[in-house]
Length: 375
Image (cartoon, rainbow, N blue to C red; front, side, top):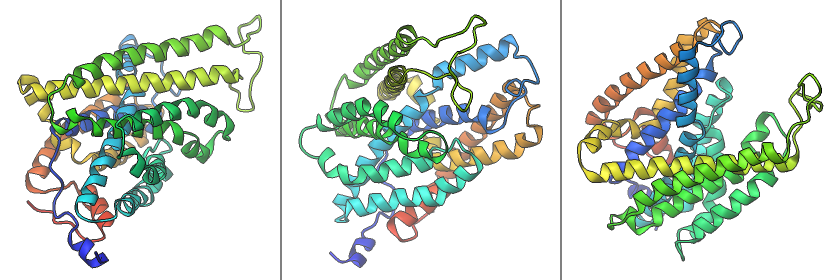
């Protein structure tokens, strides 16, 4: 088939949606942005200008327990799912799936990730794009043969990740590379999930199993992090100050402790991701009141790129003038108001258009032709 014929067969509209995925994607993005809002601009409490109140501590701790690490992990697993759906779609249209996937994530990294990284060093798009390009040549193996292949690959990558992180230089742009094995492992879990019969609509108790597996994963992850402190405590002097400090002023830790923390963090994040994914899948599948309530978030989940980049722009514009003065509670308030407005806006937008504004740009670049926009 010629390139012209392939282009002609590019999708004129998005593929059929999997209901619970849109909801889960929206929840993951809400969690990521809620964690970002307190680091885009320093709050008064974090700048040492104001002592945290009891309410601030409760809200901040609660948000961290619910979302920190878990939301990003869920987003990574969902990106793995999305990679499989896009791969199958390209195969079904007679296109070269690897070329489509590479174009998709090179465009994501260069057009959206790098510019975003220049204004916010907590950007995740650039790293995800790099990892997805690494994933592309592995896809023919992961999407064929035994359904256990992605799980085996994920386990091997999770085991490899701590050593890889220890061997890589620290600081700066190196973090984009040092975390590739860990992120790739999360992607592989998503590939496995997309290949399960339950994902194709077959009756299954998999959502419930994901909930319980997620709880166990979080418990094991926390146990490993606790073991790192117990087995390799930081040496303190009589005044309680760490004896050994690195060049950046942080305490020097044992490499085995770093490995346990890394592995524990991965398992805890994966456990949280599986727990939330299973819970959303189960609730949406029940088709009751909870499903209808969660369904309100589905339009938001169809334009997460727009929501993510828009949040940084809004936070910088509204909070930068109050650097070191705005409180943590005010930051969470701004983020909450942003998501309420975006949820309403997304519902209105998706009622008239097939894609979010930035999603349209991204998809058009992926398929090298403008995608139809209006419904």
